[in-house]
Every structure is written in C-alpha cells, then in structure tokens.
Length: 266
Image (cartoon, rainbow, N blue to C red):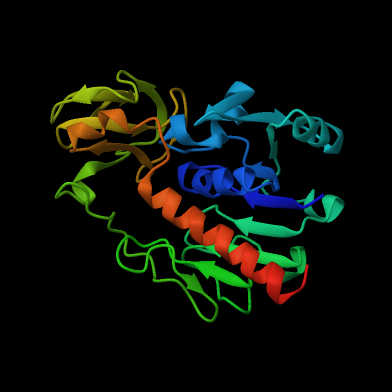
C-alpha cells in the first residue's frame, strides 16, 4: 500500500491532498492540535476541530492511531492525525513525505523520512533537505519543480488579486481570543467589523467577499494572519472550492512524486 504522508492540512496543502487522493495514493495528513488555516471551508485541517470535514466531496476524518488510519482508508476517507513532529512516519514507512506546512522554513522534514521527499515553498534546499521543492510564489513559476536549490524567498507581500495585494489580507492587531462576527462567504464592505479580539475591532480592509477567517475562539497573537477578503465579487461562486493556486501547486506535487517514483524505480 502506497502511503503518502502530507505534513499540514491547510488550504494550499489541501490542493495537493486532493490530487494525490484522486490519483489513488493512501494519503495521511499530519497536523498540529490547533490549526490556524483561514480558508477553513477548503482545508482538511478543519477536521481536527470537527472530527471530520469535506472538501469538494472528499472526506477527512480525525484519527488517533494506526488502526484508525487503516479503517479510514478502508472506508475511502482521508485520515488526519495530530502529530506535528511526524512521529508516526517511522511506524508506517510511507512511500513519500510531503511538507506542506508552508512555515517559510524547514521544521524538520528531511530525506531520511521516506524514499521520496517533497516540500512546498521557501526554507528547503532541493537535493539536500528533500528531493524536490515546489515553487509557491504567485507568478510565472508557480508550481515549478526545483531539483537543486531553493524556492523564491518569502517577500512578506501577498500575491495580487483584483488589484489588491497586502490590502486584502487581515492580520491580528492584538493578542487574545478572537470572537467572529462575520462568517466565510459574507459580502463585506470596507471597515465592516468582522470580529473582535478582546475589545479590539477587526475591520475589513477592503470591500469584497470574505474568503477566509480564522476559527472562532482561536487564541491569536499580534501579526498573525487571520482573514482574507477577495475584491472579486464574482468569486462568490468559488469560495467553497480549492483555489487556482492550490490546484497548480498540487499538480506540481503529483508530478514530482511520479518523477521520483520513476527515477528511483519505486
């Protein structure tokens, strides 16, 4: 059985998870105990909170051990496990480990973890830390396979959508528990109050579709990305589906996995 471990279950990771699952691989997702994805309706990580979640008709369920992983696969579900350190990797001996945490740095993924190792975005040296790195920066090279060296460094500036870049992303201005007023999918106007962090109002920076908002009741800290407003109101039909960026990167991950299977005759 060809297990593929994906470290991280956020919205970008979920594009890769969908591609792998649909291509017949037995995917196992490893997550932290309190994921902070903001596009939660298209992130398998939400199953950590809810027990299960569905993204484009594919169901992920929270599991606790090897037996429950096997049961999930037998029922055609994707198992997701709280295991940020990847302790279960040695036990299940997967064909591949994919680092889709998108931490902008390597949190421990290395080539000794599996016959095939792939990582998304900055912080990994292709050919040294992992076999292949996938470019995650929007633009001409998005989804490109890197066999030597690094992906483009993090600029700290979100990609432009509908003429807006950093203006469309909401970062916490305070530490504390967030109390959401709005919900993902709402049409919002500039300066609408979307949530509260203590007494601090979280206002929409622009008008548009509220595409992402961190889970209600999450403990957030100043500077954490907590929301995303899409200025393109036509996207109201698309916010419940995997993004173009995530699909592009997912295609790169699947290609990288198949290439390495051929190279290593696995």
